Picture 1 (tube, rainbow, N blue to C red):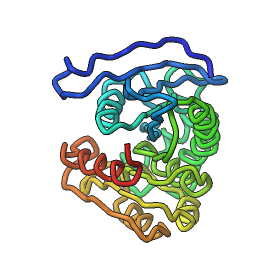
Picture 2: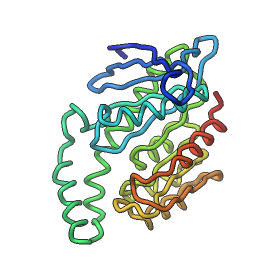
Picture 3: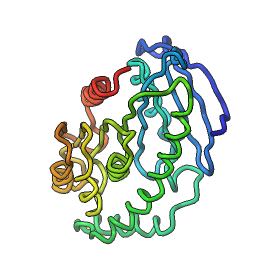
Length: 256
């Protein structure tokens, strides 16, 4: 991990009442990321960590204000957060076939048709195959830092990425997932291997989400503790209290 910048953000002036938060930008191989932590974190008082997922295709810089807000909320609970540039987003090289897959998806939606399993697989699975190993590499590096330790959670982003990561990496001890993207059938099989506590957010009227598939995925998760928080509204209409509920979930399961 190569640090490219480091600064201390004055949380007292942002209107949220948060304490100071350290922000470190880094590169790792061919991707970049940002690590936030409570300024009080130290090797003698390490803090837990949340991996901040993002929607595909937008890029870390475009999502920065929302990522920072999530990081500040976590830091107020004594929890560090990290995000990385998703494969094919920002300045990264587009994933092969991604543009054609998105065009095929738009064509189906414009025709008021259900996207085929082939289109969904071509759009989502290459992203998952690339993103999950990069998250694991990032986790290796961040957990080597003295001030980060203990439990790890995954939050938001493409639900297929969070599902596979929770299924294969035992370091992930809790996950807050957003049912806001299409789900390959393979993801349902992976969900049955997930046994950690889950908090799943579903926007009931999300125009870009297959509600029936989202409910089928929730049912498939093997966790004995799982909560579905469903609210009326579209993809971007998530109520503020839903985000607060998700943070309380992480506070319970990660500590801080």
